[in-house]
Image (cartoon, rainbow over all chains, first blue to last red; front, side):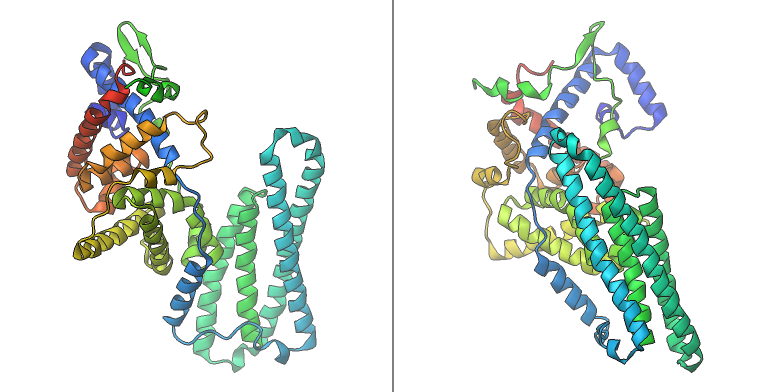
Length: 221
Length: 224
């Protein structure tokens, strides 16, 4: 019972009973003290038995390849139909791609800024400039999101016009995929706007938008 | 034995105070600091489930080290532990889509790790190879960023804990590592191991007693 109490495994009522008992029982109090002291030692041990571990890139590549092959024929690369699309659409997609590159760079800047801040508090003097960089980064992310929304709007219009000529099964599959991506977009967007300074969440959100653009472009082409 | 007292001197082992003849623990309630297995935000997990490599990298960054530590304590060999950790995350990436949404990601991952280790152990038994206790392995696993001034325990005590852990039965060691080092709840450990909570409690109690006995020379004089 003392171990469960120490480990936080008792409900509130039982925990209160044990706490009351501990006030009158020197033996149980001593046991609790032993457990707490041992726990500190084990925590220190656990903290030391840690290693820096890098994720080997080939691990994910192998998993990705096998996962893709288990789903049937590989999907056509997104660039495959690029040159059969109208010029103005290509320009829109190129703009979206440039935004992605720009945002990736911006995110790297944000991470760099944060890493620098974490290094030393003595660099506080440069914080004002850093804050400006951060604001610029956030603005860039907002712009990127807008660019993606614009691209999605254009592509959706094109596909809507083509829908009547498409196989209904394909349309149903498209709608299902889009629903799934839209859910991801909504979830990542919610997470990002709850923590607007979080570069990683921004990356996930933009990646979700990017996936939708890719899917729509694939179909429109 | 001299110097063993110093091994824990910086750990705050005598931070507790006595009031009215009874020892009163530090202010926080039991179990308060025990919920450190925070899962990643749901959108990240959802993206990983959809196959997003960047999201999966985030999962690896969050759980790679705890999983490696868990596996290391089961197999006792660093390079093998790294190999099995890779296998664990490889399988996790492939199987993440099938993970039940009611299960916590960390619980599921440790379950995958447990299976990977179990299969590897079976293989090892077939090969009749015995992995011996290797203190050098443990030293190599130390986080070198933790210098002597920052650490609460010495290398000597570290090795003593390691040796004591290796002397536990596998079931006892698993519950000890998951419960006391990784701060998981019995319910989660039960899902990972398939053991009942009653058995887990018994195993942990015995493990604690054995560890206390083994480490007594190192901790003597420091326990109130």
